[in-house]
Length: 385
Ligand code: SF4
Image 1 (cartoon, rainbow, N blue to C red):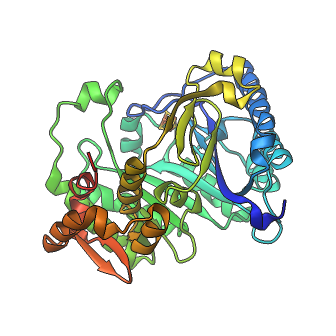
Image 2: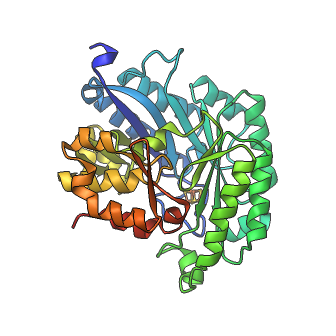
Image 3: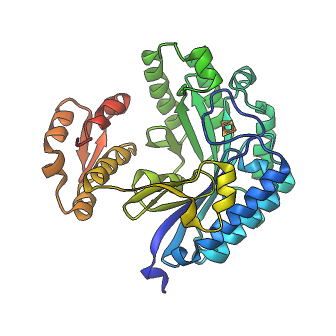
């Protein structure tokens, strides 16, 4: 099959291991011994191999190795996983404009040698989970690293030639002032990464943070100030906001995450990983032992397969697309659903426009700054039932 006849695909690979659980985290991840990690890598590789037939329909555009802490595995294990992907999927002509290949790194879990192995394995984007540049806040979050350890890892990555680096930060931590947050932002931006993600903390049930802070009322005024000042500061430092919580230098948006917001196809591999293929959403088995048992055939690890109705697809198109500052395109909507956006959402669009929450430019509908401040409320308006 020629490249031109294949459909685009993004691949997400989940590594569910962490050195220690952070106090706010409810992700599918846990500490594990080396034996368990090795078994998991083997199982993941068999899942990848079993996808060969499915893979023939696709050209892979992005790969994202996330977790958990992928960098807690041996560098060689990551190289083996990527080798298996290359052997079974078409990544196009990698030497020219190959896929964006990202790995998430928890500071303190990489060495120069490991970073070298990543580069050799074709990884071209690093995403560092820094979260805060204040060591007191890092301790509060239960992170395993200091700011200085992160900075050493970051510098090593630059010296080894990584030219596309993201730093993840979390705002609105318990007791954090606007000034504390701006100091973190300043220290991160001073390192000139190509991309910064700045999410507000959500205190999830079942985490130690929930037991300590779950009852506290969120300070909405402070949240608004944080959003406004973050945008102002980062725009001044040469970043532009392309999604509610994501900022990039020109030419460095995260292509992989953009796939999620624009409802394009992606395949999740590994424990619990979510997929969207055609109009079906599903996720992989979430129990480690069951996953290890069934991973030899990717179809046996699929759970909760749900064919989305057209109405659900329209809702997702709108509320995921509106997260992006470019918004949603009316022509693309009409091409995808055979009906105009006006016909389906005319009343909501008119009301939201009158209230100054959305605007239209060049056929794109997007959230205004006021709309971004009230984004949860605005997006809920696009639910059709
Ligand atoms: S490193 Fe990330 S995935 Fe692991 S426990 Fe901390 S927040 Fe969760």
